[in-house]
Structure formats: structure tokens, C-alpha cells
Length: 111
Image (cartoon, rainbow, N blue to C red; front, side, top):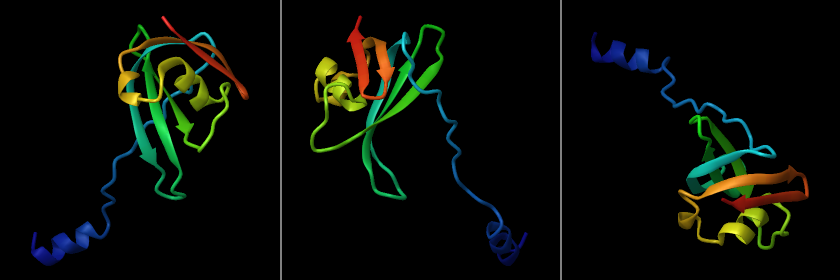
């Protein structure tokens, strides 16, 4: 294949990674936090923390905790900060249970 043909071929190939969506957290879920990372959405520029939890069967669940200047204790982010502190590096490896996961009524506990 010539360089010109290769360039033309390149114009038709979409070279991106595809992320498989993870199921969200739910009440009663027990698992270990395997990932907690700060992220910024590309489109709108929102800041958040992506948390990935793994259960005993190695199933993974994911949730975005959106950053704000102030959060309530029963918000997603508030529940994590109240229980685990504000240093996300220390969240990794913690085994937690989702006690309540309803809007404005989020609560987790460390096991």
C-alpha cells in the first residue's frame, strides 16, 4: 500500500477506545473500591470523581460523584466524604456497603 493509499485509508478509520458502561450503585451492594479518579468531562468541562466498585464475584459498578464547592451529607459525594474522607487515594481498597442510594438520601458504610 502506498503512502497516499494509507493516508486515504486513515481518513476512514475511527481510532477511539470504546468504554463499556458499568451498572450504577444500588442499595445493598457490597464491594471493594478498585478505582477512584478525578475526571473532567470533555464536552461540558464538569469536574467529578469516578468511583468503581467490585463485588465478590468480580462484577464492577461505577458511579460519578460530581464536584461542587459545598455538598450535603446525603448527596453521592457527601456520603463518600463523610464516610471515607476527602483524600480519594485512601478510598482504594476499602470494602463498603451501599446502605441507601436514593436521590438526596445516599449513605454508605465501611465494612
